[in-house]
Structure formats: structure tokens, C-alpha cells
Length: 114
Length: 114
Image (tube, each protein chain N blue to C red):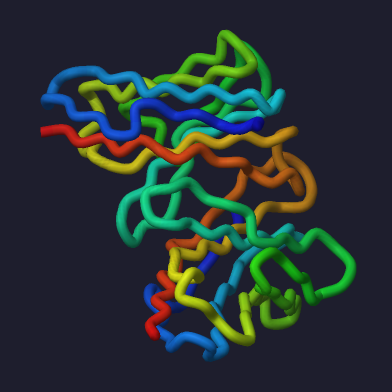
């Protein structure tokens, strides 16, 4: 079975600063990886996904993530954050073969202050 | 606009009562899911359905029941057997089960049982 670890439950950052949200996964087979964002009292929206190919994946709202197979990581980055990026971010993994549902990490709350 | 509608947004019930949460989608998606979200716990899968008249238990199905009589509808019943039902419930759908098909989420129902 696969699992996901998001190492930070909260990340405070000032506006216009860069940010990295960390995600590590565990799986004995190859995986697909996702980042979702959740604004207060709403559902989740897909930010980006890694299926295959280039290990650097670009998503919406200026976010990008890099798949590192040797480190089993999929960290999310943004070079300059805005107040509106304040939200909870979830990393998720599914196996890329056979039958598998999506497993989510516990989330990282990004708090952007002026 | 296509999407997922969850109703109601807030729901209050007395302990010992069953309650049904509604989820409707007009995305023509085959697969539908129910997740439970608790603070600091991420999302945990309750039930999912790949096609009409078929559904499977997720990681925390005890105390819940579902039906899938129509493609667009996937209601969740929280029974009195669920020991700790107060939570935020999210419904999602995807074009097909598993692999790389991203999830589309509703805006959730916050259930409070007293």
C-alpha cells in the first residue's frame, strides 16, 4: 500500500517570499502524484499532477513541483507567494498500475502574511 | 457549468439519528467518492463507486452506507452506529476509476452531531 507524508502541518511566510511545501511518499511500485489546494470551507482543487515524463511539473497559480524518484519526494514550490495563496495544500498518491484509489497526506496549511 | 453539488452545506443532528448527505454531479463521470475530513487528519476514504449499482468500502466505512442508483447521484448515510460522526464530508467524482484521472470535489457538508 502507498502512503504520503507531509512534513509540515503549517508553513508561515511573508508575501512575495518563496515557499516550498514538502511531500514524501512510500510505495513499492511506480506512482502518480498530485497536489490539491483547499480554500476555507470549500472542496479541493487540482493544482498539478505528475504522471510521467519531465520531473518538473507546472500547475495553476504559478505553482510547480518536482518529482524525485530517488528521494521519493514531490515538493511543491512557488517563487513568490500572494496573500490569496493562503490555503491548505494536500499531496496525494496513487499507484500507476492495477486498481488503486488516491491516498492523501494530512495537509500543510500555508499562511501568507503581509 | 458542470460540477458537483453537495447539500446541505451545514447539517445538525441529534445523536442516535441517521442522516443522509446528498451529492449530485453533472460531469457525466463514472466514478464517485466520499471522503471524511477532520482537522489535521487529511482526507480519508469512506466509500467509492465505479459504476451504477456498484460500490466498495474505503478505509473507514464502518457506520456509513451509500447507494448508487443513478450515475449522477451518490448519497451517503451516516448511521447511528458511527461513533464520531461530526466532521466535514467531501464528495468527489472522476471520469474513470483510478490511475491518472483527477478528482473533482464538491464544496462539502459540515455535519455536527450533538
